[in-house]
Amino acid sequence: MTTVVETRDASVRRNGRTVWSGVDVTVHAGEFVAVLGPNGVGKSTFLQVVLGLIEPASGDVRVLGEAPGQANRRIGYLPQRHAFDAGTPVRGVDIVRLGWDGDRWGLPIPLRGAKSRAAKERVDEVVEMVGASAYAHRPIGQLSGGEQQRLLIAQALVRRPDLLLLDEPLDSLDVTNQASVSALIQQVCRSQGVAVLLVAHDVNPILPYLDRVLYLAHGGAVMGTPEEVITADTLTMLYGTPIDVLRDRTGRLVVVGQPDTHEHH
Image (cartoon, rainbow, N blue to C red; front, side, top):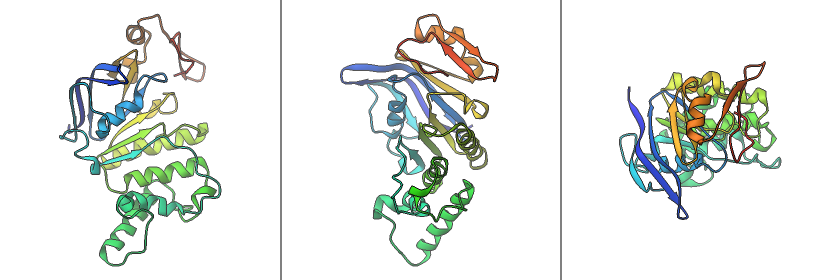
């Protein structure tokens, strides 16, 4: 398997405080990995380390075989966001096009020639890939949260990345859209061979689609399959306090007893 992200005994400090340390992670091509844990444990910080925006205090980090930040053109990134204002007039397809050349040109501008045709063909391809063709030419502000999120995922995919970083992409979506977007992300993993690191508070919407999870808590981390990591024994060890993991009648996981948070997993 091709290794896309690898960290060895990595640690990060911010404002004089150790956020996490001793983190060992390996993510392979085509693998769907969730980054889990309560608020404030450094989940988004982990993505920033992968992007080279934050330098680790110690340890080794390699991304696509290079130092963090050196291969960012091969990474698609969807940061945390708020919904677009209802009056935003930019079309969904233009939002996708920003992922192709927005870093050079700003808002998409009319270009001619082979490069322009290639851009349009690729934008149309990823819009169809995420199932957004029916509404991609409407103003982004008029679309639902789930429709907007599909187009933003298309934007992150338009340059054919080898790694996709998604920071809480399911936040503010209803249960139906959470499931459909999660299934879409898994499909992209499998069909395109793209590795995905997805930050989430709640594992339940993505649980059926995941390969592995990275669980951060109290400055440490554990990585493995959901069945290996989201257990009473593993989380008790990670938190240093008794933790129970329960399933309700619908099969949803609930983590009980975790300190300093009311998040359900």
